[in-house]
Length: 254
Image (cartoon, rainbow, N blue to C red):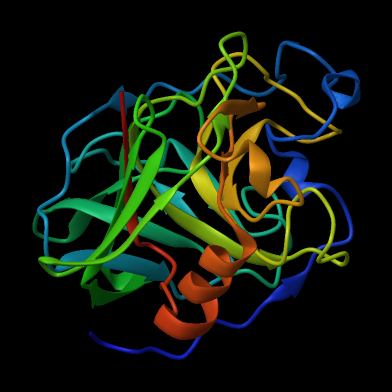
C-alpha cells in the first residue's frame, strides 16, 4: 500500500463549510432557494475508471469554465474562497475526459454531476490511484488503492428526510475542526457535491462531506443531514496514514 504525506490543513472555525451535516435538526436553516446567476450545465453519473484517474489543479485562485470544448467565451468562473471554504484552498477538479486544448472536468457546483471544460494551460495534472466507494443501504465506506481494498468501515449517512445524494463526486478540500471532540470529529473532507434537500445550512450552501463524529455508536444508521460520518480513527487513517489527495473520486451508491 502506498503511503502519502497528508495534505496541508485549514483550521475550521465554523461548521463544516456550511455543510449539510449536523447534530441537531434545529441547527439547519431549512430548505431555501440559493441565489445566484443561472448556469447552463450538463450532468453526468459516469463512474471514473477504477484506477489512475487524472486530477487537474488550477494554477491560480480562479479559473474560467466553458460550456463546451469549442465555446468561445467562458460560461462562469470557479473561485477559491467562493467555491471552497477559504481562498487558501487550491482549486481541484476530477477530470472526466481530455480533448485538445481543453479538459472536461467535474465541477464543485449545483446541480450535482455538473461538468464543464477548462483550458489545459490553466491547470496542472496529476494521477490519483485511490478511490472511495460509499454504499448507502449497507452503511459502508470502502477505499481502494488501485485495486487493493485498504479501508472497509461502517458509516452514518443521511436520514430519510435529508438523504445523502448518490452520484460521482471528489474530495474538494480537507479541513480540521477546532474541536476534535465536536460533531465533525478530528478531520473533515468537503466533497464537490451538495444536499438535494438543504440549499442552505448554518450559513453555507449545503455541501456534503466525509468527517469524523462524536457519536460513534450511531454509525451504521441513517443519522446525518446528508454527510457521511466515520469513526475518528478512520478519518485519521485516511488523512494521516493514507493521505488521500484532493481530487480523489467518491462514488456514492444506493
